[in-house]
Length: 75
Image 1: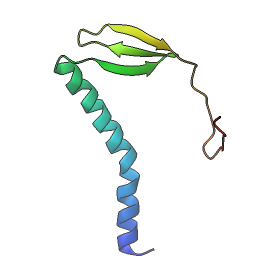
Image 2: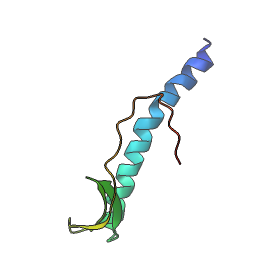
Image 3: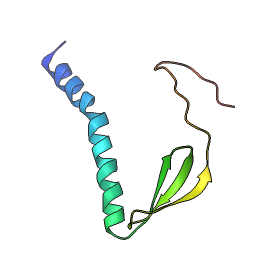
């Protein structure tokens, strides 16, 4: 593997952690600006308010635990 490919591989490995950090920052910035945010948690979609309260918007099924690489057909 060439040096350029090694650098690209290293940078690509950083994408998940960088994107998670960006989502976290956007979440807190929205709340800090007085906006509400939708959050999926505990079998539901909740509206999170800047004061820390949450309101259930919709109930959902609990998420599935699926091994990496599993193929599923979605109807």
